[in-house]
Image (cartoon, rainbow, N blue to C red; front, side, top):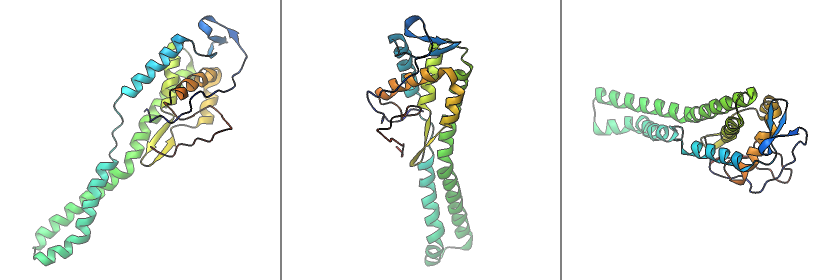
Length: 213
């Protein structure tokens, strides 16, 4: 899922010069689509995919709901025994209230602690689907560019106050093979748009590590 922009503008990175020049500025090596600077059609495909990703509704995050439920439940369990005695409430009423408070607390804590995992699961699934498309490399160039965009936009997932990786970047590099150069070119464009965190690019002059949204 897309995140608030924090990337660098105008980032530049070295690229492999191996391969044969193909039409529309694309370069072919075996059956792989590699990247010279993206042409206008390539950029349009990437930015169109980015707009579609941004337009998707965000994954449901129940952490706030869990907090709202857990706090009243905790207060009921902590204070109601004393309040109940002061008001002279019967044991039956006190039992119902305490059970209700316990349910609120337990359900609230479950929602609070699992919300981040649910959000990460969506990003992991999207990144893996995109990675498989790129790994197979059987689609046309536009489909591969859109898959690269989906992969990069879901490379990180927000879990509560922290942001974590949705995949092993080193392993993903290996799986991408000859399509890594194309993904790097797409990443440069998305960084220019300040749409993603750096994923596969390397820049020794900066150290941008996601710390949360």
